[in-house]
Length: 408
Image 1 (tube, rainbow, N blue to C red):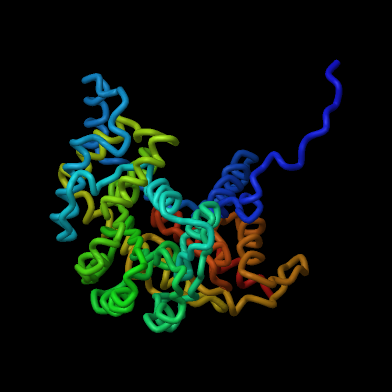
Image 2: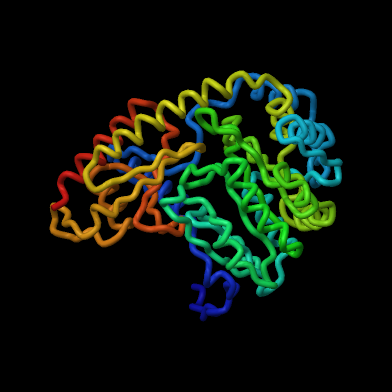
């Protein structure tokens, strides 16, 4: 029989001591586990459109397979996909890039991680407005950077205040992240609001801007989307504009993200990628070419459905005593406050002391999976994805209302 051996306590890198697993991924797994146990659970955790990938995009992937396009590609993306991305940036954002200013990665998350790994030195600071996507601070930390969180103000729609930004900037500031529309709040910057932020950044030429535009096409009403390098051309040479096909084209599982930006940064990102994933999946790249070049007529019906769902969910949540919900301009999330429920007791006598407690209560007692606001750097809020059918969302709102009414 093998003898017992002492396991070294130093096997895991010290940098990981500060890294927390993704709360959204963990909660998604918890929802799946409870369902497998036979529980009737509604999961509104994942940031994933409920619509299927359009048929023309699927067919492009099938065609690529039968045409033998299943080999390695250039590390940073095929020439065909880079051309489609260049055309997209010019057509929709009035941004002009050359091939060596474009990089394709394994999803937008991968692109952002590569950017930080390629540029951050120990102690470099990254300004992150809160509420933020859960992975931003963790990626900065694992790349030896320092996340600098600027809390958003609810009365300003959770958007970054230019004066707060100016105060947070130091000689060590390397990046500022701007995510519009935002995950988790759905907040989006008007051209004037974005111009006020870029005016601050113009004064600090040592700072780069990471524009996460993944929800670009999911905006509602007459809202006009703009991106930083489009608003302020002086920032063009120090802005990495990140996007992907996951949200707009309902292609989350295909894992294709991309970015346009400064040549030196893109080259360094490609060098990092050459030693990790190498190229993104060839089949997914050919599908993404069709997504960007092909018919775009499905986007508006999908967007209209999301807007209808948003309006219904906001109205239903604001009717629940103790919950207040702002109307987001984009994405497919609402970010309501549960402050009015903090301090109340559950039917079992436990006190709701935080947004995390309230979310756990919803999961255990109402069979509803949502994400607590502290995961996004802001309490006491919670994120609800409305990327689900109207019927499911009505049921979810009923469960929230019933669960809240049972708190005393």
